[in-house]
Length: 281
Image (cartoon, rainbow, N blue to C red; front, side):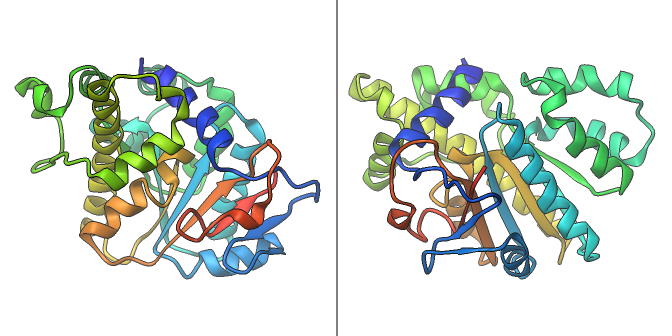
């Protein structure tokens, strides 16, 4: 169910919000002033942030190449940073540490990769190999599928105690009307749901975002001053997703980078409440 949810998030958010793909090669649309700038101009700004949220379409190879471009650009200027991953659960952190530390072979790493994530390894291979080669820390941010599935089906309050214990401590789920409007606009394909089903769907999204925000902040707490580039589906990277949950707990300089959408539209309709940059791919 979660895999279908991931794909649905990507496709539906494209239709709901993202502007048309630009034809210019490598164009970066800066949302605040509506200008197309160079990749390096964007990078100069991203380097000033402590958290960089990079939204992706999970099955689009070119977007993963752009993610790697950003990671390389940060590394090549001696920026001290880690990479946060939706693709790995927080409980799998030891696997990521062993991979980056060079003590886990590819043959032993791949089964753990597929146990955490269902997208084909070749899509992410270069990112994982580059971070391993340069000892760039990787952070697992996700929660078990069973939790988000259970919340989506019956709601947060009905979550069994056994699953609730697997969530970050103190996590609650209070979906206000503004968040429901955001979810309803973003996930238009779910409008046919009953009121209770839709509320549960909203709760699942919020639990997902809040949990990843918790693990992100927890890493920053134990690694003060460390920048983090977060790779996640752009439904979570959207400023109303994980960034909003982080902002509720701490004031941290951040930037949001999302992909251009392959539908007709005007990128000038994008707002800084959505993202800072839109990447042409």
